[in-house]
Every structure is written in C-alpha cells, then in structure tokens.
Image (cartoon, rainbow, N blue to C red; front, top):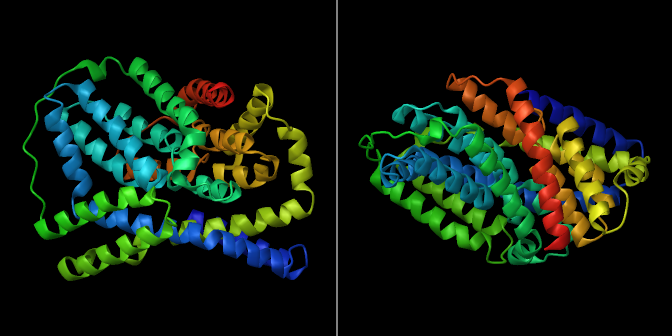
Amino acid sequence: MKTALVGAVLLVLGLAAWAFGILDGTEVLALADRIWPVLLFVVAITVVAELADQAGVFQSIAGHAARLARGRTVVLWLFVVLMAVVSTAFLSLDTTAVLLTPIVVVLARRIGVSPLPFALTTVWLANTASLFLPVSNLTNLLAEHRLGGVGPLGFLALSFWPALVGVVVPVVVLAIVYRRPLSGRFTVDAAAPASDRLLFVTSAVVLVLLLPLLVSGLPVWLPASAAALLLIAVTAWRNPRVLRFDLVPWQLVVLASGLFLSMAALHNVGLGAFLEQVAGTGNSPADLLRLSASAGVGANLVDNLPAYLALEPAATSPDRLIALLIGVNLGPLVTPWASLATLLWHQRLTAMDVRISWTRYALLGLIVAPITVVGATLALAFL
C-alpha cells in the first residue's frame, strides 16, 4: 500500500501542476500517448507471469533444473542464474523478483542449503540482467521510444556488451562470496505433478510462443495482451478462484503515472538544466562514465525510475541513452528502495521467513555495483 500511496500523492501533484499551468494540455496528452503502451505491456506481462506461476510452470522448470544438476549444488545454482537471466530479459525484472524468488528459496530448502546465495542471485540479476531487451525493464521501454523505435534486435545490438557485463560481474562476485555453500552436493526429491495438466500445458505453450513474439518487432503490448487474455480465459474455465484483482499491478501503474507527470512538471521548472550540469555532455568514455555514475547514484538515492526520468533529457545520443540505462538498471544494488523489484523481492523473502541483513546487502552492493556500472560503461565505450 505504501507504493500506491506514494503514487497517488505524485499523481495528485502532477495533476495540480497541470491545473496551475506548469504543464499544458499538449504535454499531458503527449505523455499519455507515450506511456499507455508501456503500462499496458507491464499489466499484461504481469498477468501472464502470475497465471503461469499459478499453473505450476516455474516450479516445473525448477524441478527439472534440480534433476539436471545431478546433485551438484553449483550446477543447480548456475541453472538458477540462467532462469533469472531469461526471466528478466523476456518477462521483466519484477517477474523475476516476485515469481522466481519463492521458487528458488523452496528449492534451496529442499536440497538443504542456505537460501541466501539463491535469493541474492535472483535480486541482483533481476536488476543487472534487465538491460538486454526493451521488455526487460520499464526504463528500457521508455528509452526505446527515444531511440526512434529501433526494435528489440536494434536495442540488443546497442546494449549487448554492457548487458553481458551486467550478468558476469554479479555472478562472479556471488560465486566467490558463497563458494563454500555452493560447493556441496544434494539429493533430488521427486517433484509433485501439476494439479491441472491442461492448464499447465496451455500456460507453458503460451509462454514458449510469447518469448519470440516479444522480440519479433511487433508492439510488445500486443502479444503480451493476447497472451494475458488467453490465459485469463483458460484459467476462468479451469481454476477461476486464482483470478483476483491483485493480479493487476495497479500500484505500479499509479506510481508510474504519478512519476511521469511529476517529473515533467519538475523539468518545466528547471530540474533538467540543473541535472545537465551534473551528468555532463559528450560521448567520450569519461563522459559516459559521468552519466552512468550519476544515474547509478540517483537510482540508489531515490529509485531507478525517477532517476531515469530526471536524467533522460541528458541522454542526447544512443550511447548516452545506454549509459543512462547502465546506471539506472545495473546500479540499484545498494539501497532497498533503489528499484521496485528489490522491494518486491524483500516482501517475498519476509513472507517466507528468510532474513537478510540490509547492512550486509548494502556492503555487498557497494562492491558489485561500482564494478558492474564501470565495467558495463567501458564495454559500451570500447566494444
């Protein structure tokens, strides 16, 4: 509810800015035209992921991974890394934080190891693996619009090397920090079959078909919405009790709408000019590092979405736009509020009685975030 309250306050402030003339009607209409496809995609992909999870798809993938690992904890952990990267790249960072986290915690407990390395893997990669495709992060969808509609493959061509650094660095750090618990062995238990085979198969097929459609060049809200409507229809037939109002991420929709209006108003009263001095200009490696570092610090101070919106006018070229995304996507690993995905991840851990020290989380983040952001920015500059 805190997210909804903050979003409602920001929305009221944005509407007040419109009422008092800080924003004019043309600007508000332009904002609405820009954000409705983005928010529709977010709603649709969240519904798809939640219903697929209810059907047992993600649990089945985790069970198959445990069997393929053949009792080696490190191999199972590498499967978790792969699942986190694929889930984040195609289904968004919030999907990974919300759906994959409880699955890997249960998996870790089943094999008798600490859930912390698995849980940290999901939250770090939910953030740092969110640079591959436009659909991976709300910030990417906004950036793709500024890139002139380059499409998923064009976006990937720009972001691939920084995104790869964003995966490799956290994985290496986790492998070093948790080398002892990851070096053991475990015994695989038989997995329970899906409670509704038809619903499970339908959900799995929809997901398999959806992934290539998300990188086909179609407007991403279109296949995501079609998939959501199909799964809603099948679920209403087979298991209607799971169709709840909270399947729709309405709190995120309210928050994003309020942030868009509020940031547009702040830019009209001089925020953009001030931040241009902070983020600098130019496309040299030093200039790109200045922008990505500013974005990473901003994300950890206030959250990655407002940090992106605040600094977006400073991203005056494709390289600078990717540098901005490096900061706001790969940098939010230090403070709990740096990204909504981190807060959602912590809610799931608390519900499962998994305790994590925010001090330890921040200290680890202070190690991995700068290395990741700097490494990814240099990859952008030189590769």
